Length: 173
Image: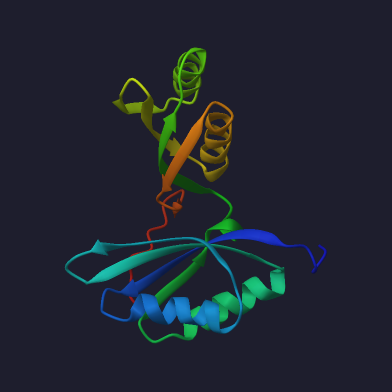
């Protein structure tokens, strides 16, 4: 394996749901010059006050290992899982895509939305708003096609991911 190759990784971090935790995690990345491509966070256990942060980042294998080790050392963090290394995981992202167009381009936009299984949430005489869910690459392919048909505005949630199989990651250290 070439140690200079830049790889995309999805890292799942289980943390205490308390003020300042997200800022500390983001600070770890910005302080060392690491880029966050996508970040989602939500409470996953209300009784235990735990939240899951899903982070998509890229780097050499050495940089990814440094990120994981530094994350694991932060006090409010219970676990750090590299879903990319674990192999079997599920990744999804949601996007709202508004397209402004007219004529035959409107028919083509509806055809493409149907092909991608996007839902039409709003329709006017000049625009559509579509909802699409899937992998980041599916969302990107859909938005690229829409951009070829008109003026586009996009709102993306970022990646949510979870490992497949019978392993549950909701435990404290």
